[in-house]
Length: 272
Image 1 (cartoon, rainbow, N blue to C red):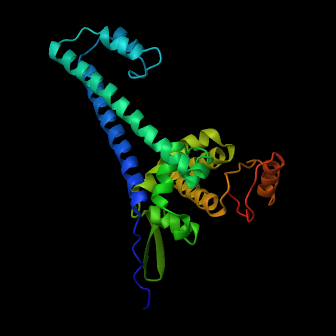
Image 2: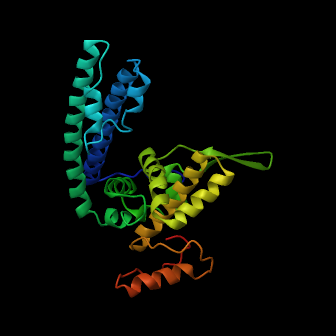
């Protein structure tokens, strides 16, 4: 056999169940977003006075203080039917919130049993839900022999066109696992808030690239971080972004080890 056709990966039943749980939560969140958008659309169609619009809370659905619900109840609706529709949509949002909370409990149960997800949650920008999603979609880091192959699987690599001895690189391929690609892109901005090095890298890219391209590049960088964290079986270790010395990672590892945290050997990569 020439091994010209790659072998298809057959997921185990347990992994497929995890996928269904994650996708169910995504479906519920998408439904809630659509219902919230319907409420905003109905409110915008009321032609409200400027002083009422200025008093509108930034988040109509924030539970803390319940200011959004109070503001909606204070409106004088032009049509009674619009008021009834909004009330119906608000009840639907509450129901979806309860269902999402139930799904979150299911994801937390999966997280407690998934050591890969627990390692991934140490990476800035990756919480419990994204950690479980990434771990489930990768389904064993041993499937990938290098970070570049994992990035290709997620469709986070640039497309390549060659003709006449010249090679051109274009937009990302958008092939492969769209759930994994979405999770990494979603993690970029929260990661930049939590980690100084990621923030420095992202800000530098934004000066020379568009915002979306910069996020995509950082998503690919984060996926490489994911690869090494899982491959080495260790938690993420932050380094000082102002330290440009070759031994900055070893220095950060030594600092973590001095606090009694065990780090797997072989940590030789410039990203952690």
